[in-house]
Amino acid sequence: MLSIRKIGAIGRTYRNLKRLRKIIAILLKYGFGDIIAMLKIDRYIEVGLQFVSRNKGIRFEKFSRAARVRMVLEELGPTFIKLGQILSTRTDIIPVEFIQELAKLQDNVPPCEFNDIVKVIVQEFEMFPDDLFEFMDKVPIASASIGQVYRAQIEGYGEVAVKIQRPGIKKIIEVDVEIMLYFAALMERNVEEMALHKPVKIVEEFARTIDKEMDYTIEATNLEWFKSQFKGDLRVYVPQVIKSKSTSRILTMEFVRGIKISDIMALDSAGLNKKKIVARGADLILKQIFELGFFHADPHPGNIFVMPKNIICFLDFGMMGTVTKQNREDFVELIDSVVKKDSTAATKTILKITIYDKDPDFKALERDVTDFMGMHLYKPIKDVEIGKLLRDLLLIASNYQLRIPADNFLMLKVIATLDGIARQLDPDFNMIDHVAPFILKIKLAKLSPLRIGEELVKIVGDSLYFMHTFPKDMLEITKLLKEQKLTVQIEDNELRAIISSRDESNSRLSLAIVIASLILGSSLVTVYQIPPLVFGLPAIGLTGFASAFLMGIWLLFSGKKKNKY
Image (cartoon, rainbow, N blue to C red; front, side, top):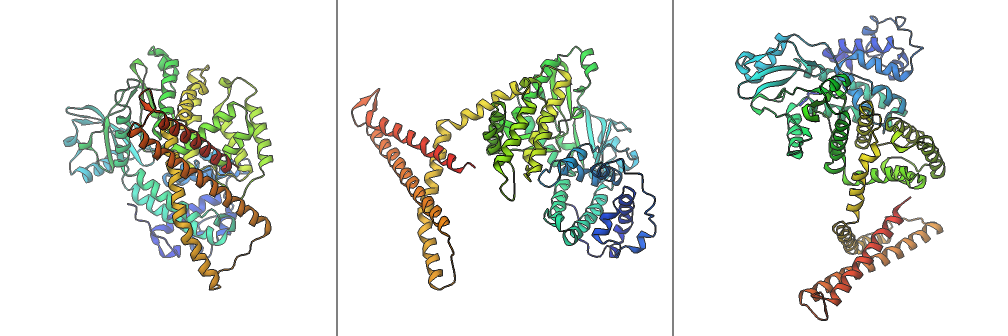
């Protein structure tokens, strides 16, 4: 776990002071002196400011503020780059123009010395690389902000890829996160607009996220789960984790030889079928999202290899996304309504999948959604660019202060990334054709007898709970009113609405009880085989089940209709 301390006066924490001076210098360099002034940092670090000249900043006028934020994060290094990458998925707190800039952040950094890597191996295994591996390359094949990847060989396994955490990276991240917390606390205290977004909580959430990313046992677990889900699927290959050579700071897995999915010339030279590759890759990612609900959240070209026989291999399972059954169903509704050009249904679904503090102007939003559809759907569906469609959808949401939760946005981003890669390999690729079977499956699942039965049971359960708790709640309220500890002011229109809602609830409760009685009575008739019989089953029982089924469907869908905007 990261050892993060909330710091009060920055001057009292010497390990932070030098780093803080550097951060301030970089902020000034890119023209963010206004932020320093707003946060009132000067009074705490006047000694540090003497080393910084406010006149040495670059000419930033030609860059947007969002672009300059990206440049600042890049220059500040690994921790801040990771923060930017995570924030690029948070449309609920970051404006669209910043989302687009932060998505450009890369964490490719120069590798550290091999001797430093050896120290990490010795700390983890109390063995030198020569004792742990048959051989190990001294030059990494990949270098990122948190770890580096080396090729090695183990007897009995052959070639392996060894991902090793950079020495001292944990301490660097701890210092940076402490400074982030300090800045976040100043924002909450001095900048009213920022206080609404609770920056301290954002930094604390980031600390938990990066702490998980530095624990390679979590990535190993993700990889093994992924492998189990696609066991027997000949379209995909998942490398094996070598547990005996893995720890929280070192991850050893089978070395995979393949071609980056974006290397078109290499794919052609190897005689691979790009159309088949695209179809397989799309189906595999869509299966993760729509069926498993747990998906590879960083499917950029460097993390997808193609092996002989057009087999797809996913790499780097450090970043995974989750999507609930309800979110999948809502997303299917959105796709379905957009394809059908039903702007009213699309607008309602957009409101279901977003978060907002106050109700937006529905008619105005619907008008913008109609314009959005006209802008993208005037051409054949196969020619629609999912990435551009997503950007315009985010812009609409931003204009109405609608925030897309991180998991939902990550799902949309993965699909847009997939569409972009696919179109490079196969210009005729049609994402909607590949999504269609998953949409149909989810829609049919909602109408299955089992699902309807589950919904009916839930309705009856909620109704019985209401019957049990409502009288007690009313007695408690009556007691408070008698003791004059509670006063209620109800306007006439509000009273009518309450009465109407109560009458409707009573009717639905009565119907739910009738349905439950029908199911119970029909079950008894069926068990005792009471004549007359039809195909060996009691006609009265069949009639009861059919009546309960039809009434249940009416009750279920009338309730959903009432709950819509």
